[in-house]
Image: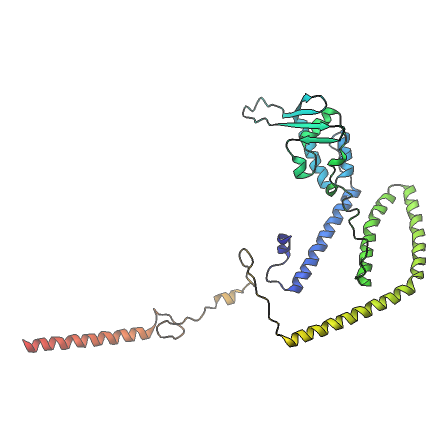
Length: 334
């Protein structure tokens, strides 16, 4: 989740920008899920073989998982079966390729318990991925099992994965506008299946139209009957919310006057820190003013300082005068 959020925002974003980007991210994710649900429910995948287990998998799994199931079903055709125990224990191995002498032939054992409806393979592919492996499919085909056992149908990969998970119950703390939006979203999700089933035949279409007309008349009567009570509840809820906000704002004002609120400490995130903004070429060309370490003035450095040259020349002059005085004194002594 953290990696996905970093695509839409960075550590230097404000709270307002973070919330806005997070809403865009969730909206795009919901749109992608709705598109996948639409393609899964209204578009049937093509069958690769005439095996009844593939047809059952197409009716159960989503588009992505049916493609993964096809890969395992195709790979199952490249294995040979050796029955170790009758109707219970099998050895699955690849067909040997004479043209490839360096071929590594891997072997797996599959045990089938028909009374309990279990298929166990030593590769443990189901524990990792959630669908039956190619070795189990090959052993099931050899044993005459052409359906997926119910215990090996993982709900998260099925078309009905969202059934029973939608929040149709409304909490009492939500305001009326928010509850109405949630009701609208919930009804939209439930009517998708109603529309897809009702448009498959003429009889279903006529029955669906009749149900819709009856439902509209019933809903209008319910709304008229509950109109007066809803208006009173809406006014009371808005008044309570207004009182709560006033009391909270007054408490915050008291806290602000009592103590000074400081900014929270900034934490450095992992990785390379991104620049806050891109500098234009004009700002990049502007050089910083240099400060000389010798004289303390700006505009030059220690190497190009003129005062250093003046002091050096004066020191040289003093040293030459001293040497001349020493020579004259030595000549007088001689």
